[in-house]
Amino acid sequence: MAEENLKAELRHVGKHFELKEFFQDLKVIKPEKPVGFIEWVQKYTFLKGKPFSFDKHEYQKEILADTHPLQCIKKSVQIGISETLIRKFLAFMAMNQGTQGIYTFPTSEDMRNFVKTRFDAVIKDCAKIDELGFNVDNVKVKQIGTSYAHFRGSFGEKETLSIPSDFNVHDEIDFSKPNIQNLYRSRLEHSSFKWEINCSTPTIPRYAIDEMFEESDQRHWHVRCNACNFWQVMTWLPEKGKVDQNSIRIKGNLSAHIDKFDQKLEYIFVCKKCNKPIYYNPDTVKMEWITKHPDRTISRGYFLNALVGWGYKTAGSIIASFYGYKEIDKAYNRILGLAYSDPGRKLSRDNILKCVNRDMELQFVGRNCFLAADQGSPSWVIIGEYDNIKDKIKVLYFEKVENNLFDHVGKGGTVEKGRISELMEKFDVLSAVIDAQPNTESAHAFAKQHPGKVWLCFYSDKQMAKYNWKPDDFVVVANRTRTLDYSVKYWLDKKVEIFPQDNYNYEIYEVMIKHLTSMTKVIDENEDGTRTARWTGPQDTHFAHVWNYLCMATEADSNIVTRIISPGLSGFSMNK
Ligand SMILES: [Zn+2]
Image (tube, rainbow, N blue to C red):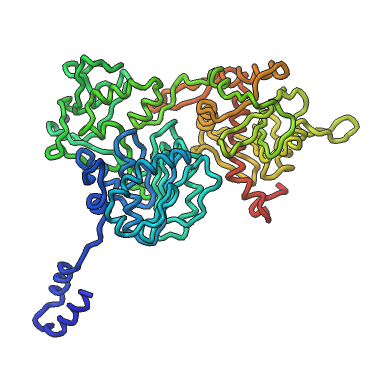
């Protein structure tokens, strides 16, 4: 309206005005400039009774303001990122009326706790949400004016949400159902925003948040030393050789290796270049996000370790929390914000026996099962099923196959069924992964008989993603290290249930444990100084690989089989 009035006025007094001046004036008169996330959050939300501020948390500002549609945040614990994301999510709904958003957590229990303790606290204090109207308010849906915020756990829900969405936030994706973001991405299809943020403390290398961050533009929070003007990311690593690259040192003995927390010592933050102490002071110390790969525009990545909180954490408290963890991988993940794979890591007998479910029994038939086999003489087979509710793989049966695995021509020229054909029928197998060698021809012929169900596995180090399904060739190409990491993680995270050992299966059970526990992860130093992880072991590790194939088979079901068994079998050649 202001613009129309001014135009009318201009018509009257037009001859005294230059058009350019008029538009300059218009800018000044314009009633309200659109409010951004930072302004909205500072104006309308509170934290612990005080207006939300970025004091000592300057790094949160850009994460809050960023409007890039695809972002990932790889972070340590307790640096206020959840508080930032909660506010961003609510501000989005409030500022863009008529939109919907989905916020996911690992389990529905996590979701309930988080909504009750964190979201409700922000909403209760927010006058703007109150003003917009707030009719629906329960733990799963909140109405904000004409927008709706939905909350879900990735596990423990009967189904994924099927509503359209404008903004998906996936919190703690490393602990959520694998590929949770893909399950919900189709919800964004009809949105003009299509925003997605993935956030987590990392777990193992190249998994979930770590993989996303690797592929992003990789933003790091930099601090400038006032003594030497060197811009640096503040980091600390416990390795002996890293002392002079660390931002935390012992006062009075800067070259000492910190291998424990000692109350009697004083820990300080120092510049990595000139070694002089640096003290947090936002007025004098420059701090900003710097992008490692500005050419990458598809996704934005933010990395935050505990040291970004140097304004409110002491150097000593960071060391104390690191060494406060009993398990080194958790200390790396939660304090340093780094994915960690323990060299020398292997499964123990205990890891496996902890997955025994006393209520289960060895089974000889089943429905909708998955099969994996390592072929040779002898061959090895494991059969399992996937429990969708518990997100666990249940081991129902395993066998050492002494006779023919595949169908073969017997005496008198008749085709005799191989053991695998019998097992496919008995367990009503949904999908199977078998190693492609040594009997490649027999395996290929068998896969051709079961298109979309049977996959031949080739390991390849060149395979960058975990694996690549090639339906036309009946093949899955798998990254050996990464898939084995993943399959070991199932046992460590107790995402496996197995029947107990008894007299009937005593011997083969021992063989299975021996194979699984004899694989060790080692780190090779390459000539260029980079490091490569590799699983190695003695000859007899067949069941370790069969287990790996079984994990793959359960994923083939969700990703590929549904597509392939749909009518038409498009793009799928049956006669190759
Ligand atoms: Zn310096």
